[in-house]
Image (cartoon, rainbow, N blue to C red; front, side, top):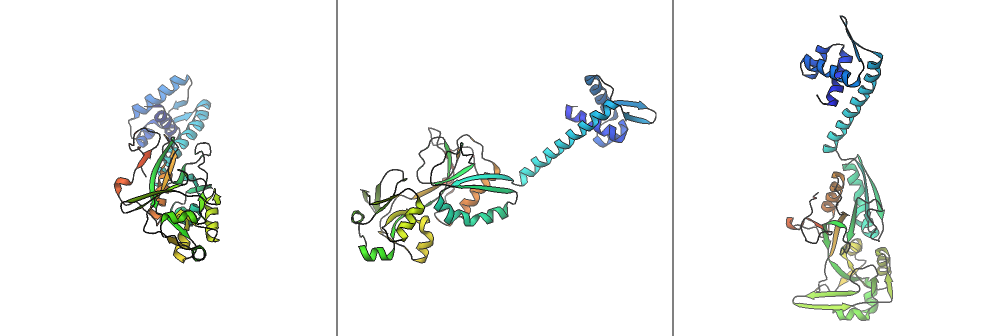
Length: 320
C-alpha cells in the first residue's frame, strides 16, 4: 500500500475497532490491513494500537496520530472533490483587459449573461486603451483591436469589423460629402494617435489601390474621445464600425465613400505567451466570440491561435 492508503487503513481500523471490518470496508483482505498497520508502526517506531480479546484500541500515540491522519484524509477528500468539480464547473476569478469604448458598447452589456451562466466565476475587468503589460498587471486575457506588434503574446483572432469613414449628417451638410479618398485631405479629419502603422491609409476599389497620408488639426489618444469629437460635429474619422454601432443604427452618423474598402479591424483575445489557458478563461473567450454580433469569423480554418512569440505561424496548442 502507498502512504495515503496506509493512512486510510489506519483510520478505518481505529473507527471500526477491527482489522477484518476495516479490510471489508476497504475491499481488501484482512492480512493486507494487518501488514499495513504493522509496517506503519515499525516505520514510526511506536505502538499505535493495543490488541486485546475485546478488539483494537488506539494508544495515546495512536489517538494523536489518528486525529491528524483523519484530518489529512478529509483534506484529500476535499481536494478530490474540488478537482472533480473543476472538470464540470467553472469557478474562480478572470482578470480581463479591454479597450474602454469597445468594452462599454459590446462587452459590459453581456457581462450579466456570462455571470448568470457561470455563477462560480468572478470577473475583474480593466478598461484601458493602453496595451497593458499582461504579466505585470496580472491579466488572464486581453481583448485587443488592430495589429499585434508585441512578440511575447499568444493571440486568438475572434472577430473583425469593417473600417469606415463617417461623420454626422450636420457635418457633411456644412462641409460637403467627399466623393473620392483624396477629398478627405480637405476635411476636418480626426486622427487616433495610438493607431499602429501611423496615419497612412490604403483604400481599395476593384483593382484600384490608393494610399494616403491623412492628418488633421485634432488628434486623440482614446477612442472615446474620437467618438465624442465626431458626434459633436468636429470632424470626420476612419473607425471600426463597432465603435459607432449604436449611432450607425440610429442615423446619428453616416458613412461615406462606401464603394472604397479599407483593411478590416481585427479583434484578438490575447494571453501571455507560454501560459496555460484555464478552462474559465477559454469559456470567457468563447462567450465573447459567440456573443458579438459583428464581423464574426465563420471559417473554421480561421479559428486558431497565433503564437506571436514563435518565428513560424504554427498554431499554438491552446483552444477554447
